[in-house]
Length: 298
Ligand code: CP
Ligand code: NVA
Image 1 (tube, protein in one colour):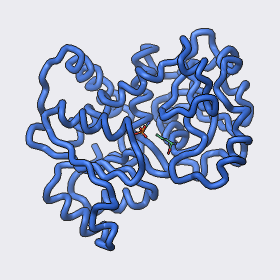
Image 2 (spheres, protein in one colour; image 1 turned 45 degrees about the vertical axis):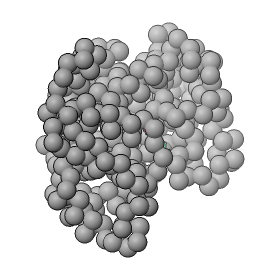
Image 3 (cartoon, protein in one colour; image 1 turned 120 degrees about the horizontal axis):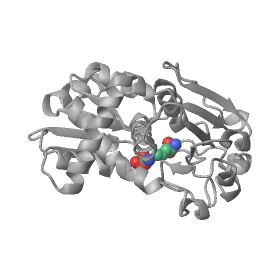
Image 4 (tube, helix red, strand yellow; image 1 turned 135 degrees about the vertical axis):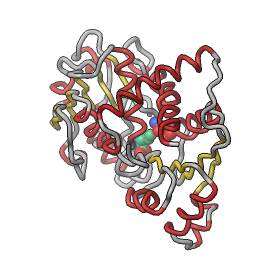
């Protein structure tokens, strides 16, 4: 097992399946109120250079429930902001903490942090990818459908950090992922894929959702990518998840969104609040899967 979780490929297929088994157990313990404190006396430092609701709170609650402590920091308040190197910061933090969760812009910073830290570093989203989200989402699909092999996921919208991690996750776990987005919004760069899944990128959203088990979307404008917002909104309008698109998928398809959602942009309220939507179960599972990640790495 790798020390860090920076991209999905830091875990192999078997390690991910083990993580899911552990998540089932942790979810049951959480629901039954069974105390489970394997991280007693351990501290996770959480550095956030971007906003967050789910990631911050689920990791903080996760550490608490596992008997440990979470320390929230913004990059702005650290000496990093005043020029202390990442290398020195990583070494110092490694003397105090048992793990670091970081959400930031540049993925290379996270790689450098992990290289110089002697403790596990977990990527809580960068401009490039969002591995903890997609691991948790694949767990949710397994929980709902009983399996993941061959499941068809239609990712419709912007080819962003979430789409990038979806490509890696679907490929590794043997799923069929079809990304539908305008040419100029396709994932760039594209990840190196391993595993026996099937990943396609097309332009037609209706073609993508044909026979899809899962319809997935994310915001059209990601954090830090606010340039050209109005143009992008126009370009992506045909990619909105609305009832017409959901009706073109499998009859019992499920709709997912990593949240936060911008209602009536990438997804309509009718769909988000409708019977196909599993978005809040999806959000809940972040807690259980991330607890499994914490228990495994820390
Ligand atoms: N999905 C997700 O990571 O949400 P936050 O930005 O609220 O953490
Ligand atoms: N693609 C989005 C995901 C938010 C959880 C962003 O980076 O803002």
